[in-house]
Length: 300
Image (cartoon, rainbow, N blue to C red; front, side, top):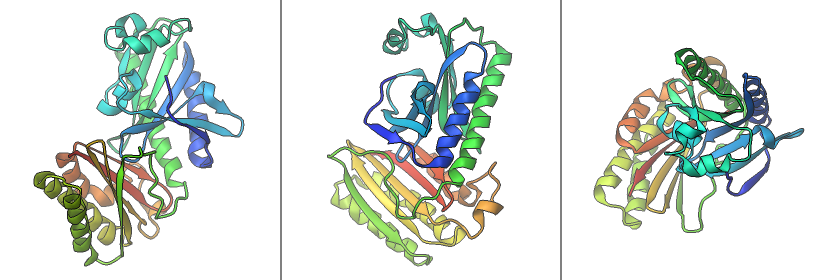
């Protein structure tokens, strides 16, 4: 698997520790000689990736990969469905990926989505040096691996400190256009956030239908942040290569880290997320010790 711009060893110790433990545990699966992890980030156009052969003593080396690369792991993350099979079986769909495995010990792979609270938060890929049946029992066990890793990832993310104004997300191309808006902890500020987005998208030449839907989605997320999380939030809008990504980062509820069950960490956002799920092309979320970051994507 080919990485993009390489990131230095991860300094966010909680997620780094989770990744080391996750890679160690899945490498213990019989027949596995290598494993990789991918985490959804920012606007979902890229994934943060690491593998067992990238681990170092001080942490984990990550790189960013294009979420739309046609490889089994990325497909599992995008679709929320596993991709399993021998290399000979996968060759018709993933010829380039299979070609890169030539000369290695790999004879089969299993790419499994990692899930938490019903949402895909990343994926894990196992490289087998022994033939696999991938029967019903093994498929069930692999699905449980994805669920367990996803739940543990949520725990790690919730322990990660991150400033409210950290909206860095994934790397952006030089052609990307960005606008940022701070929303105070005041319900009256929701309407100003709507006006901000509408003005911004009109200035960028986004069509009226897309603008209306984006403003509606943003309104729901900002309302949840201001009323339910009872704090301010930051809004970031990015237009890149015809794709519009809107991100809302809230400051969390008082005591949320200890009172919101990790099995349903986004329950305070449920109404807004249901609407976003029905209207946006894609959406995702990230948790940390400060609050929640939710993003949605629309094609302009």
